[in-house]
Length: 99
Image (tube, rainbow, N blue to C red; front, side, top):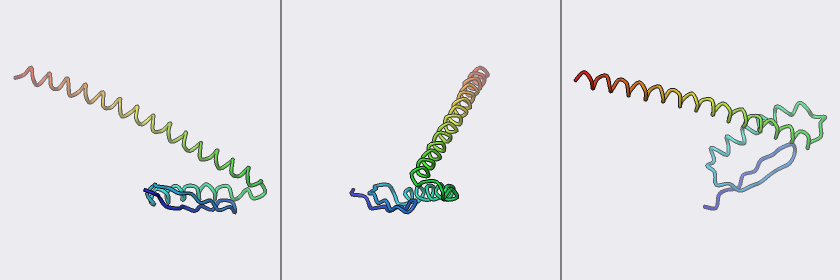
């Protein structure tokens, strides 16, 4: 699979790369980056490289925040599964004792 070319404009620069990701995923990533770009466009007087670094920090922050939220949800799910397993084990023993 060769992939396809993707072109992205950022702060007046055009970037082209090849990707094997599905087009829907690429569009989602580019839309996310476009949203981040719009957030920083209000800082026009800041040099382009500083805007790029600021955007990189924002994306990294979003990643860390999402990763942390995922870990919290996984821990909650594991705790709920453990409670369910305990309940099923106790319920199974109780119904088995009645027979």
